[in-house]
Image (cartoon, rainbow, N blue to C red; front, side, top):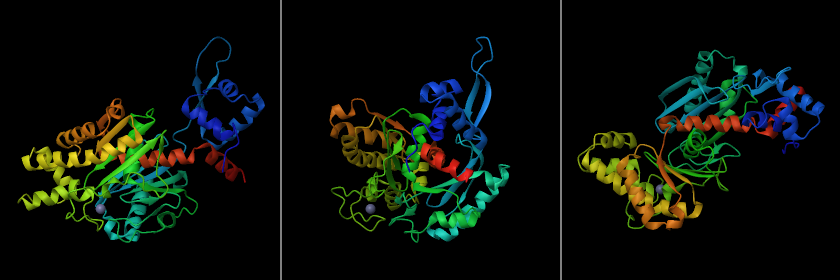
Length: 392
Ligand SMILES: [Zn+2]
């Protein structure tokens, strides 16, 4: 549903972005009559989404009241599901955690067990945050698999057995006892990209994040929004088949995938074969932190393999920022990425490219999914629809 031009929803967007901080500024930016501005603003004030505070200037006479988005008027539930553990939080509308919990949770246990546990965590966290369940305006879940965003369903996941097509939103709503609650689901690399972009590079028009932990995935942010592609498959570079690796069996069942030779899982297997037992991406991270020579060499080679694929990615997208993050994203791996990237992509493409590492660490996905939910709920069209619902 499209919002009416300069509706209450648009006015809220102007207030949130700081483009309009007073009634007078709202009037001049929107070009609407004063009475119309006041009417629409009243809706936002009554809903508690905007609050009045302090003064902006004092040039004699009555100073104008400053309008602000009230970031505390509601909360969102956010969870970042990894393969063997999860992080869940209650966030305010600025993305600040009010209560947070991390614990063991295996996606391989299937959607029912995992979502039941998550719902319990959410209930506990809402209580710990001191907020009633009625303050929860939305929820989001980041998952380690491909997602059809419109329906919030995981689609043919290589590692999430039992989740294919499962109605995650309906299950969570049921367990939380919140029938109408908006629940968004997205892929972990997308959400890490969104979180890192919002926190560190909000002005960057083209941003690519590559996560290399146990598996490999990428997220693409164009003009501040996740670019998902037609089937939610954009950025799924882990299963691109590369040359010279025909006998490397991948977790997805195919041979020769990038992830079969250059992921944390692949390096862990290689190290184990050398008599250095390592179980996953985080195990490889520990060996890299200890400067274990075999791990360093394998990480650099893996970086080169990934860099070769990324040369194509940056040639296609010409991003300003390429962020490398995840368990493997230390100096040897990133050096390997740079080496092949600058060797294989045209100088014109890499001239203004910044290759950086992640800043939010393990919290990137949680920040991203929280951001996604808030931006969804407070987009102009959603605001107008929610105000109308509230008035009905
Ligand atoms: Zn594969």
